[in-house]
Amino acid sequence: MEREYHRIGYQQCVRKGQVRMVRRRYGGGYFTILTPPAGAAPTRRIAYRSQFVHVALGYPGLKLLPDLQRFREQHRDPGRVVNAYEPHEHVYDQLVRRPGTVIIRGGGIVASRVLQRLIDDRDRLRLQTRILHIFRTYTAGSHGPSIFMRRKGGRLVEDLLSLARIDGGLMLQMSPVDLREIAVQAADRARLTAPGLTVRVEGVPTTVPGTASGSPRCSPT
Ligand SMILES: Cc1cc2nc3c(=O)[nH]c(=O)nc-3n(C[C@H](O)[C@H](O)[C@H](O)COP(=O)(O)OP(=O)(O)OC[C@H]3O[C@@H](n4cnc5c(N)ncnc54)[C@H](O)[C@@H]3O)c2cc1C
Image (cartoon, rainbow, N blue to C red; front, side):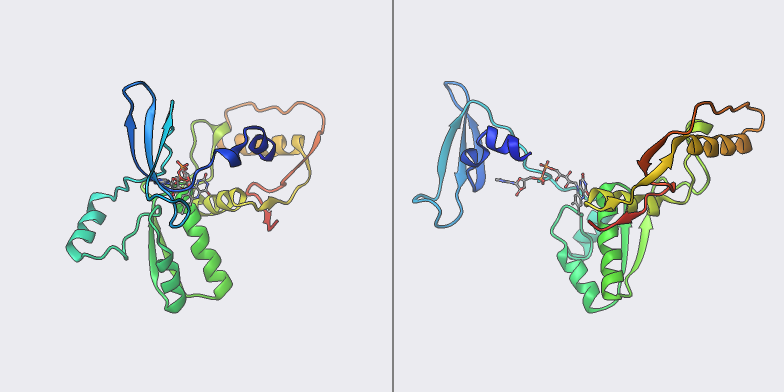
């Protein structure tokens, strides 16, 4: 990343400010009107001419589910129901001041990050936060497209947390793992779930660095 940063001269390309509008030019390309940070330039607006504009403004059009939107409109309370992409530090702050219950809806990476923050705060500060996690697709039993691609059910929260922690820079605790041994265990499980099938493991023991348990064990970097 750093090499690429220097190669393309990223620092020299960057102009800080808020984009007010982008307009197509008669002669081709675009004008982009920018408000620079206060005091950073002699004028309040600067127009840039460019051949291309890559719009990458994140999620400017936040959308709530209809019932949550109704709640907001009815109670005129934008602080209690929040989209994770909105500023919502006040929720974590309030939970530090007094115990509360948080309902998280959704099971993707953003939900897992929010969950991780709540649980980390709860562990670190000994808070009494109660968390209710609502999924549309929670599966308690073992599931998957075939016996070889089965996932244990009911471990979604654990999986989400592992995912969030790994993504957040936590390192897996690596140790030598025998791939053949893992294959033998998978074959044992397959024989149990599908006794009619003949499952055979071939190959010699092969050791690679990995995490021995099914769910990754993590340690802070
Ligand atoms: C709580 C939370 C946790 C998340 N955790 C993860 C995670 O662990 N892993 C993961 O992969 N993804 C995660 N995501 C999702 C990830 O953050 C987004 O998918 C990703 O940031 C989107 O990138 P982007 O470049 O499209 O937009 P952004 O990262 O939102 O960047 C948009 C930028 O445009 C700027 N901008 C907006 N309007 C203007 C304007 N008019 N003028 C100038 N600049 C403007 C904004 O200030 C911002 O800097 C998480 C999201 C949230 C909300």
